[in-house]
Image 1: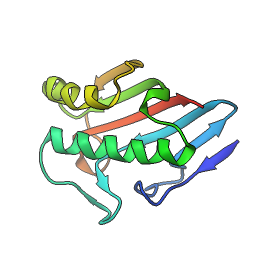
Image 2 (image 1 turned 30 degrees about the vertical axis):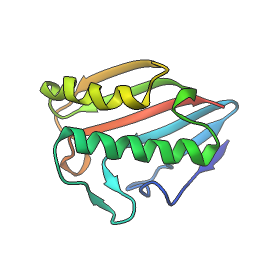
Image 3 (image 1 turned 180 degrees about the horizontal axis):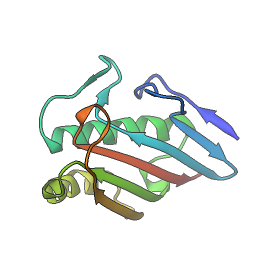
Length: 123
């Protein structure tokens, strides 16, 4: 098992890794809309927050030498299911390979953000 860490994505805010490679699979921990340069939550609505989440995921994927096209499964968490359509519009720009996906609304997300996404990808 290989632990992945990149300064181009936010540091873990708890006892976990940004990602772990096991065999040919990459397990990326849930990313929230933290700007890695400022370590602050990006301002704006669901679109702006989803854009930052996608940038963070892209940075972790890149650190392993792969891209969004290598994603086989995503799990998406929304603080408000009424953001589903706006979230999908941003998500679709990045995950053009259409990996398997679950998307659910949850009561709360870390730091009060609107969105969190985790990814399983293949090397």
